[in-house]
Every structure is written in C-alpha cells, then in structure tokens.
Length: 81
Image (cartoon, rainbow, N blue to C red; front, side, top):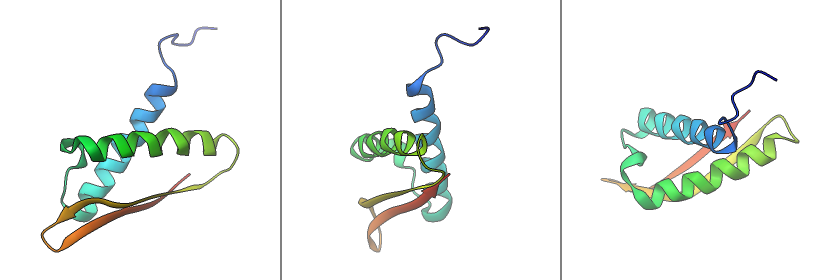
C-alpha cells in the first residue's frame, strides 16, 4: 500500500481531542488544552470513542466536571459520529 506508515491510532485520538477542545471552547470560552487533568480525561474519552466508533455509527462522550468556570463546574457532553 502507499499509505502513511506513521499514521495510526494516536493520530485519530488527537483529531478527536482537538475537535472536543475546539467545540468546548466555542460553547464555553474555555480552552481545555491548557488544563493537564482535563487533557488526560479527553485523551481517555477520545480513545474510548474511537473504539466505540469501530462498531457503531455514533457514540456519546460525557465528562462531568471537566473544568470550572466563573459560574461553577462545567461538563462536556457531546455526540461523535
């Protein structure tokens, strides 16, 4: 094959993480990429979502209390397809 041998699961995980960070920032004005604990939770969720999507067309990502804003705790709830 003429594919990229260096392209793999971690690349897909990172694309999912980037999407989640961008959507959360758009909705809440907070950049989760600056929060190490949130990033680890996003990484775990992205890996699980990738595995889920190998068998179904849509999966739900739910990360309660992902961070806190001025009004209190914030939660990440998103569907990924």
